[in-house]
Amino acid sequence: MERVKRIGVLLAAGESRRMGRLKQLLSWPPKSDESKPLVAAAFDAIARVCDEMFVVLGHEHQAVMAALEGRKFRYYAFGEPGDMFRSVRIGLAVAPINCNVPEDSPVQLLLHLADHPEVRRDTLETLLVVADENSQCAVMPQFRSKGGHPVLVPPNVAKLICGYEGAGGLRQFWLDHPQLCIRLPVDDPGVAFDVDTQLDYDLGVE
Image (cartoon, rainbow, N blue to C red):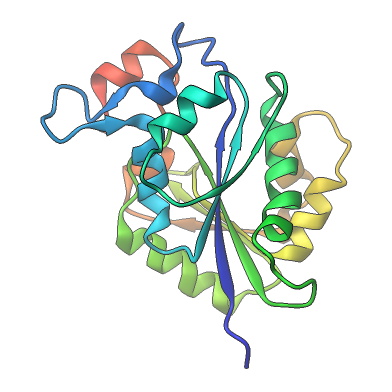
């Protein structure tokens, strides 16, 4: 049986409007001698269980690429800033092609956000086990009933997401298609933690 190829899809195209500065470049953890750019922390969090990494870039993409220096990845860069759902669809559609995955080969897409720097390895391994047992469904971790990232997306669900035209983006897609997503409770606050504002950055993971 052919081994499933896992591709990390990191969304890093945002403008950080609520933060007021490009959050992908913020140091994480804050005030640490071992800090790295936030986008690099999010990249490293999932790269440890992925065969390849694909990054969707947009706003100030050259600076974000520089923040990922030393890491191996393929990428797509918007000519102008795009909204989140546009990034999602581009990432899910283009990553397997750019990573040279044959159309009929088994693949899992690990969809993650550049402002989610803290996900435990045991959480990732649990997601992978559940995904292997439920190959036609996406698997989303949730902490205290709050959905989070990364989300493991199989090709059949990725295709539906890419063709979805409803308002409300990915969140609404899951609401409209609950049968396609397994919501997996985990004891990991990092899956639901994102850095949207200065307060989020200052407080860190609970």
